[in-house]
Image (cartoon, rainbow, N blue to C red; front, side, top):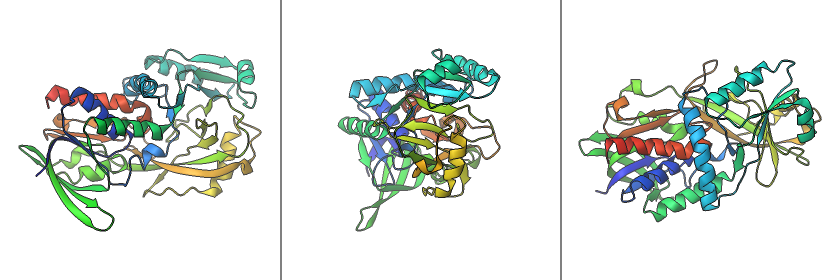
Length: 378
């Protein structure tokens, strides 16, 4: 039976980054990366805004805050080193309130997270920089950027395979059985013409299955149910903008604490194509259909800061699903990285609730997992 040092389940951006950091720390380690789909990053990782976040919003001391700030710098350095396309386009967070108390509170939160490059922009400066925008106050984040997330994931995969990692797409893990030697992992491989079963041993098992992390955790023998967080699916839809992009920066409203996301904001790809989203709607199943009837609701929200927008300029683009551990009307959850001492199972590391800023934090999440394995020895 084949035996590996480490098995990573899930070839999204975080699984790929974990493998990269592990191979940097343990160049001789044998690693297998399994993926149930036919290619990497088919779900949350490829259905997002492609924004490199600064670390402004997250509660000080949270894993999201720490790993976002660390991950941002690591991601820019990685893109420079391996020529992954990106732009430090900058972001404006806007308020139309007569009082800028909310802006000041957000700036203070960012400062507590180590984000010390924010600039306060008054209405006059906003008008010069973004003539199409209407706002009374703004926070400008120069370290926010955008990148080609597909090229980033492809680069990670290529580097990992060059280092000897075995990549196993179309491979669904059906059950995981801890033993004194590590884990017996049972899988089902879809070879298109037929389905085969395959089993192997691994000393360490890393559950980075994203939307399916809780489902995979439930297949791990003797894992206490209390160690598996609640699981919620939160859908976000995007609309493309038909017309010339009037913005030089990413444009965000102030986040609404009652919403499950950052509000419907503008983003753009590296070619300048402008889109708006995502909204936030809790759903029961993974469904990537975009609802054209939401066009007027989107337009109403966008006109708060972009008053000249016409609803018919919005065209359905795509949708994504965020894996959350908090439900409607609950406080946003933090990243959860569960180590062996949390579950009582040696060699088991599990990741839950890796939503935004998961892309930005991917390399720092990888370092966090790598440090846990180094601390407990390979």
